[in-house]
Length: 92
Image 1 (cartoon, rainbow, N blue to C red):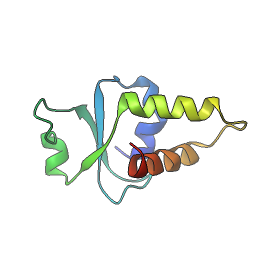
Image 2: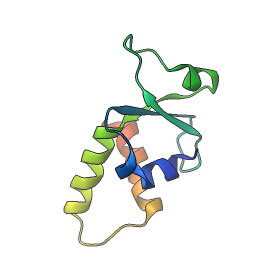
Image 3: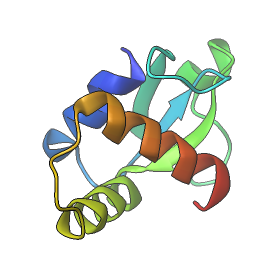
Image 4: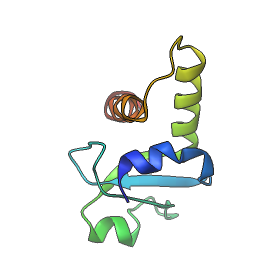
């Protein structure tokens, strides 16, 4: 699954999930969406595929909803993805 697809389909995801993705993070990064293990480690699927923590789904939704609410134009899916990547790298 590509990161851009997960971000685009964010409203269908359970907010208790976490997104893990391959680095460097780009719209085409492979990712998995899983529950974070109780011990805070990476889920097996993320570990096996060399992925790192990207962002929790509830944070993704809060960030995108807040950004869109304060935007005068509707950004493209690619622009949303790029902004989320920037947020995950610098602020999340």
